[in-house]
View 1 (tube, each protein chain N blue to C red):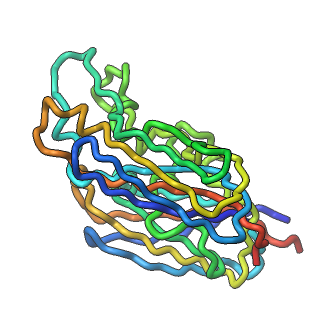
View 2: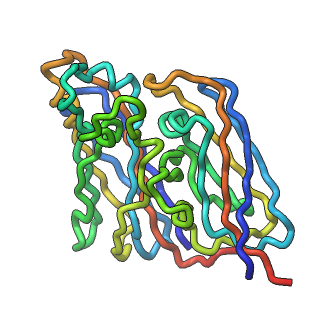
Amino acid sequence: MEKVATAEISINQRSQIKHFQFILPQDAVRIIGVEHNVWMEKPFSDLILETNDPFFYNLNQMMGVLKLQTCDNTNIFYNRDVRLDIYGFSLADFSTLWQPKCFSHQGKKAEDPISIPVSSPIVYGYFKDQMNEDIFDISDIAWCYRITVYLWYETLTTQP
Amino acid sequence: MKTVIKRFVFDVTVSDSAVSKTFDLDKNIEIVKGILMTSNKDNLLYYRGSQKIEINKEEVFPDGYASKLLMSGINVQPNLRFYDIGKFPAGNKSVKVEYKDLDDGETAFNPYRIELYLICEIEQE
């Protein structure tokens, strides 16, 4: 049976590093996927440069680096940039009427597939803020946001 | 087994609020295979929404699970849009959704409608 564990990290300082952990139940046998989501506390669009240049575009902002690690010899099994998916869809689209947005044109979201056995119930997590470093020239205050990490795992228990 | 798609609708009328709804599946539905969420205001569901979903009192998605992870854009083929949850037994045929709307600072709130689609299998007569 597939289940999911969640962890939420709150970032409110520049270059902040957060450690967290998942404690999986005893019957967890395999980690099968990871998903994550960014929740902004303040509108990120306030930081975006507006310009009339039609060839200027904003890329999806990198928020930071997420790493997950088990206690056994698998060690670090997930290491990935976390991005805020707001602007990348309009890349190289010069139409002004109806530009594609992530909420209308996104692909099917799915977890990043992973397959590792669970020998220890504890999974360590690490997140380092990058976004507040990138906007250092624009904003002198740290932009607050939350990251939710979803860890999918399989259990021995069958469905009822 | 025969495949059917069920549609359930609820409204979010107040900003920063929680909406809890329980829907009943047809008696002959045996298995739920996939879930899809959509809205008449996709941007509000995408940026503000999160929910917990239970089927047969079993948690399928935990509290705070982002709604955007259960949405599919128009770039996805219609028959691939559902989030595959395997073969989840319908049990007592009840589907409970605890939806939370949370201001993200980016979008302006307007009352919006959420549609929950379930792809189910019914027993063949």
